[in-house]
Image (cartoon, rainbow, N blue to C red; front, side, top):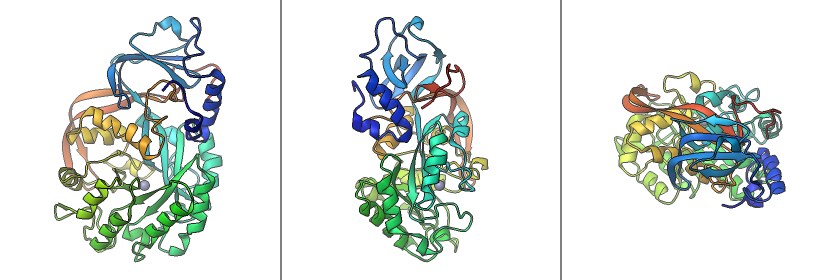
Length: 430
Ligand SMILES: [Zn+2]
């Protein structure tokens, strides 16, 4: 793409607007770069893997004014103000984590997104229902606005969001306010992607499919092409699991898709039951429901994943469900670690990188601008070390699997500005 469209800029989120304005001043990316002009940052000598091309080759990346301006075989060091040495590293589009809990100070589970960057390499996070209609403005004004990491949100159908933890938000169905949720979606098109609902029995008690129906209604009432992100794992009955799957529309997101969590009676009511994938799960997959990993502290079971993948439901997106509780569990749900588990399950490096870049970008309708290293895109880049060697992984139900590769984040650039060295002068961020 030769430039960044105005519409695309508007879709970048609140924090992308400054960069978009700069881009507009500069004209189309590349055009304003004279022979003596320099890039602000050169990422040099890495192996670029960009699933949006697709491209996999040794390339240098020139970034200026927050945008990727050049991806070339060799950009001389004198063409840049600063250089990030990427020799021996895998250079990928900034990772997108579709399921996180990034509402610190507003939710007990919330973790500051920027603080996780050294462990995740993530440049875009999606807040998975941390805020409901009642406290969304604080998430936007007091958290997202102060955060370097690009942030979007699903607004919870419960108007208190996840602030009530550990008392589940939908034991009382009256918190599920369709009009309030629809209004929050409608009023925040650059920030809110749709509605989140948690459907586990230990969240919705015996309210059946009603919370999900309300979340879908809120999306439809908003007048936007908003999506539902539905959390599963231990729903009340096996029949309810199929009903949930049948209600989901193309583009809606099924998170914790490989959960093996039981319901309150200890029964397994997930998408794989007795080793068999539910027909409703396969049907959902085939009509375009997005299967999202959402590993978390209790929501990834190798035995469910292996059966589902083998029977036709591979993941579309890999996400972490990182929060202050899950981040301390042995499954270590940090995005590159979860991605490494999928390398261990037999997916290729190209596939796994796509599941954390182009695929989530598409799932949030930002595929034109995010999850890509094409010129004109924001300068969101992740540098990874690919470590080959035996590694042992554990899921959230004590199942252990041996893997062969670890992806370790080594450097992250967000909107053209590295986290850490080289430091920019002045230190200015979007
Ligand atoms: Zn979650």
